[in-house]
Image (cartoon, rainbow, N blue to C red):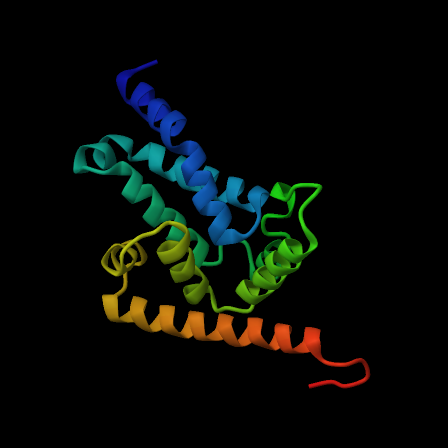
Length: 175
């Protein structure tokens, strides 16, 4: 094994699990995230010497994951079906019913967001990035991140409030 291959292998061992969690949050499906991450890592490996010399290779890989997810490398219908199952394999058998209902409502609300809005929610609230960091990773302005975040949070609030109202409506009445 040469030095470049050893360095890349070490990077994947150290950062792979975190990158997979990140890709899963963006795609909503672990299997799709594995495919996306594999494709990104394959492209990254061929340029590893150049990428690793530039500074932070993890930042480059995360940016590549965001771009691949944003570019719809798998098709919209597969993404929507995957978002229905987001986190389902991680839920405990004894999950309290209220927690299950809230997770399900949140999954459905996230599925309703535009891809850019979903990406900004993952970057800002799942990954904990600042607006500037999210903007750099997405390749957009800070203003775009702010507006996408605002629109996404508004849409999530509306979606989740409607579900709450529907849950408390008396039988026979509809919105």
